[in-house]
Length: 452
Image 1 (cartoon, rainbow, N blue to C red):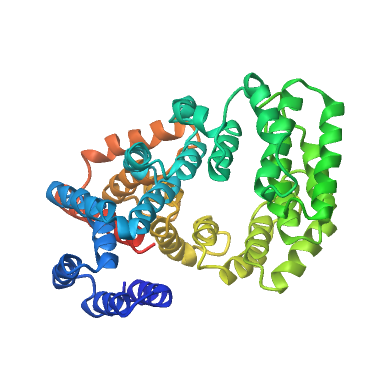
Image 2 (tube, rainbow, N blue to C red):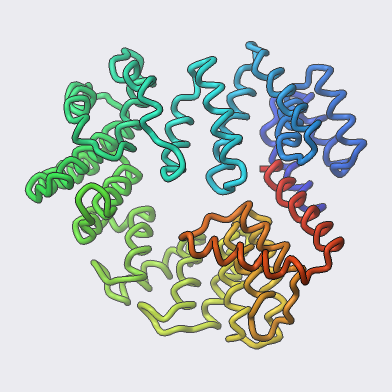
């Protein structure tokens, strides 16, 4: 807990723009998040320290106390009404939207906050469109059409970008073919590289929907030429490759998407994008090419490559399973919740000895508190029926409830399994203790989110 406070202090102090902000950071660190610190933050907010107001807004939004949730709205309104510091209000909206991407329990709050802000001020359209892209199963993108009609004809560059982002999310892009031409074919040579990549994506989707292989090949040539000229970036190539690989819009063109990504394997981003698919199925690279590319990048300190090597040796896909090597690579990037999650699973498998199973529990808990909701599913399972772990119905109940709040389920069956564990363990748990521990666990996660 002390370490989290120090991390927060360092990050905030580095980004401070004034002595007020530095004093705020010092105060929070010194008083260790207690009641006294909260009271001091309220006083600082009342005195006009907007950094304190913004933090209290996040803090009270996360609270389960209805009165404090009301205070969160009050502080948010203060930020919103201070037109001289409108960036604070927009930062809050962006923060809650980004949190919802990883934590489903924040989704509805983010949705309401984004809509209210956009309706009143019309200044978070980009965040709103991104939000729909992050939650495609929950919200219908067509509800943004009321804004889209203005975006597509606006002379403002930002609104035309929002229109392109909207089109890139619609289920049937063919009904907007004329708009795609309007927004893409008449743009100047100095257009944003991201916009140019989005236009390539849209035309790829149209070609896939029509199953026009020739049009896809011609578009790939244009994308490669644009990349080589510097008109689109590595990110743009990755986005176009992913569009081809995606099963939407007429099916997947995995080989074509991977060949597009292979336009420049000296690029870390493009190599690692391709490597994620190569780990499952050989498309372009041999095992030796995959391993040598990942190993070279890991040696240079690339954390993503190091993590991928750990995962590669955990499985029995492209290379023989090697738990010891997997452990050594995952340990190098343990600050990443994904590494904690997978090393925790490796230890729980007992492939490195039963004596490390408790370390597996600890790592999964750290991963869960670091933002990986899937780890709560694994924790519930561990205490439900994992050999070598003593069953504990209180822990099953706690972690299964946390999973419902913070995990994204791969399918309905997985959700139903978690719900059945809650029901089964509910009558066998130590009620008072488990409810108290659940409250502590919720508070721990929400404090971690508030410090993001």
